[in-house]
Length: 249
Image 1 (cartoon, rainbow, N blue to C red):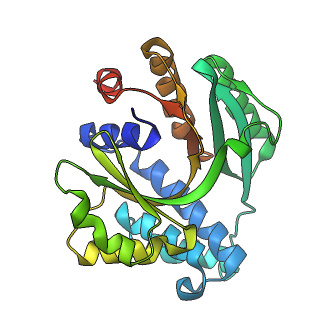
Image 2: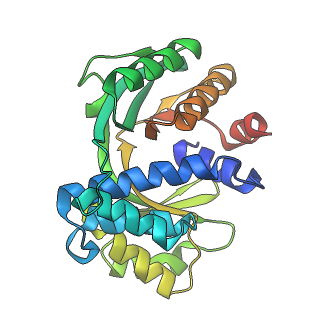
């Protein structure tokens, strides 16, 4: 059975050109700005900033863009934006719980957009606290299981990883959020190519979803993730990998 990591893996493999690279860079820059504002501009002493910068580098964001985003957060730039983090909770088709992280300079606009997309694609907005207890913050590194076996990933355990799980044809290496960077570095030094590495809200349990609801749910998640203000969507669905492949094709 598969979840959000598998869906992103399938989408990543099928993507040929990132038609929304500019939008993606904007979201990454906002995350850097907030991290720098909250913890300072030195990534060596600010793990949140270090992670945001690494994600930007993974996306091939130019160095100048990264430096400008840091300057906005530390106040060195005169055009600093008043961006804040907002968490929305709700449900999608099949009763799937959704945590929607937004980075916005206008709560009213973003809240209206999120509510509209949920309604359009068969979901609904919940009250604060309605689904957040179903998730826990965790570092998650995704590795293609068709290229490596579990023994190849043992450097991750030595570096502090909590567990390694097999989810269809991807491994998920689980860490404490603060240990993600060290575990990532250990795997990269061992020559392991990573599909993704991020601190995410991992479901404590997953909800099985049939193919019809899964198709609607993936449309909802994609629409939310394409919204300018939405930084991340977390969901607790469980769907066969073969179903996800059909939906993505």
